[in-house]
Amino acid sequence: MYSTQIAQWGNSSAIRIPEIILRETGLTKGDSIEIISASGSIIIRKKTAEKKSLKAAGMLSDYANPELRELEKDAWKKAASKKYESN
Image 1 (spheres, rainbow, N blue to C red):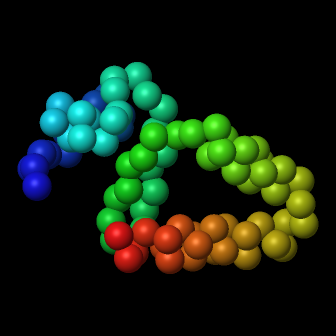
Image 2: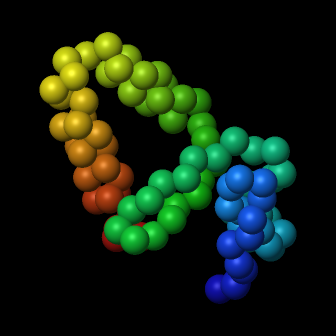
């Protein structure tokens, strides 16, 4: 386990990821990543082509029935939580 701090970066917050963590996870500087909040934890993972198609599907939901948008968001959150809370 490694420790770091949350720092100010312009109007945002930032964390530094130790090089050893980048090597162990196969991430490199410049990679596109996803950041997910699940069960009180933060999950950072490399974006893949499959993830981009999921993003496109989510964008299409902007044109769907407005009453269903919140239900869809909740379903995605629950699915991510179930997938990652056991890890």
